[in-house]
Length: 290
Image (tube, rainbow, N blue to C red; front, side, top):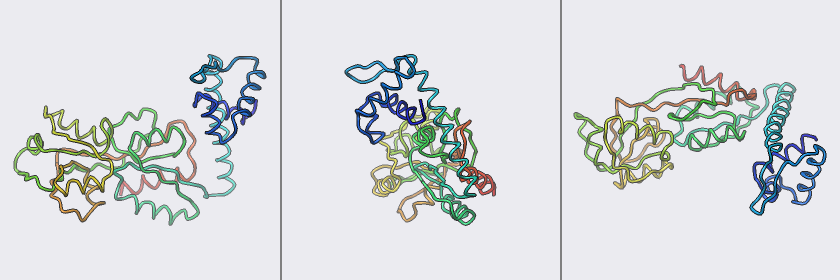
């Protein structure tokens, strides 16, 4: 049993079909089936049960899968660490940023690039929940996301808080009275996705005041969202920084003083971080503190 066989078995266990695993590994099905057969013969135990609909792991297979994940992760982390030691501060910064993003990020990255010019970048933008999933799958190492989310598996570094803003193209708002009560009948299209991130934060604000908002939809594409608001299709509620990143729209804005949105930097607990990721975390500590 070697590391190559373990990688093959992990793919089979996760895809639950030889066809899917072979496609994921970019190899033909017969050699992969043969590798599985050889592994079972070598261990003298049945690892999978074959059904018409796919493959089911036996108890032994489940145990091997858990051990294989740890072994492959350890081997990959060891390889990365040794290479980084040998090449100094070269490497790749693989990180994600929430769809609503952060207007400080471009300046932060420029500062990082000036300090570490040999680092390359893999930048993914997505919903906060998807970024958490990508970290677990090792597609990225760290991510800037927005609360609220369950982050028990992650180390969390608070970055900053900012006010939410009501944004409208046509709605008349009286700033001298309770804004949340006025929004009761206003058609709203919210950023993010239902049940996630800023969407949940906004809905919690209404729920805490026993207000049922008139939410007619959601849109994670901020440029499109702002165009819809500008056209009078609906109004929205977004973090203040989003307005700064998307100027030029003919809209009215009202800062909601009693509500905030928080950005945090996260990475998975008990997992090796590349030197590039560690340096980026260190820079964020200094940059956001300032």
